Length: 379
Image (tube, rainbow, N blue to C red; front, side):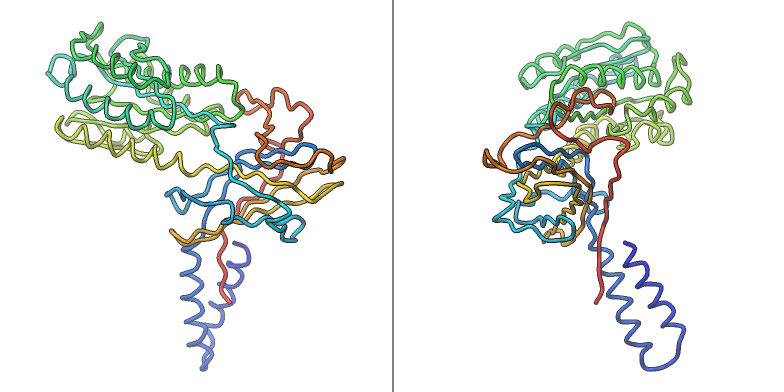
């Protein structure tokens, strides 16, 4: 974006000057601004390299707030030290992200007295069932509930078996709240802790969590303050989590709900709209899972430190963007021959801290210089 910014400054200076060149500069300025709207954001999440000469990078591609899905290996160009690496030499492939990453979504449902005593449980169960069916196709889903009690309750533990989720949700149709009050702040705090605890059991190195909370009222129990909840949400271990909130009824306050749903909030006025609200959140989660890419290739480098730039080109939506990082190729080279389909050698992490990198080199996490750019150009 630095080159684009300098070009725009030059164009603005030209607009202040009289003459026929001014009209040409105006056209160029419009073109530059148009191209800026075509920029993709490519964000590296992790990368690694391993003998004989394998390199992997796990990243996301987005345009604005929308994920860019469906890119193929040929839609990426790999540059090492600013020299394009031939696709015949790199043998680049897109691997299934599931070989290195796991995704969990917790659905946290308000079953306080205002829900269970008002005849709203059936519409909630129906909406939650559709949600778990849809999201459960791409990740593990766990369903938990809360009322005024200090603890949240597991309705359906995290599972890949979609049928188990349906059976557990049915029990909520006749559920009676232990405490009819609403411990919203406490439920968010406990929900995040439980989500982190469940993800920690996974052996895959990359872990992504999503919390979706449904409530029809503000916090009435006052077990935790709003500030205490907000402090928990912004903790380092949850920085990569996505949080969504669904609110229903006149009692709910959107301002308070936005504190929870930092990645999206759905507010509806009556129970008849609950199903649609759940569907919209499920769609957003589903789309966001498609922004992940795991690119694997065979580097021609055999020694020393090298700078890698991966450029993504998308036709629909139209755009271009890149990411950059460094790796060390000391000792690289066959035998054996490099197989780009080899699973990645990312180190396991606990709260972002590598546990064991083995004999591979990794450049994910803190302390590594990373560049993520959204690019546009005007000639």
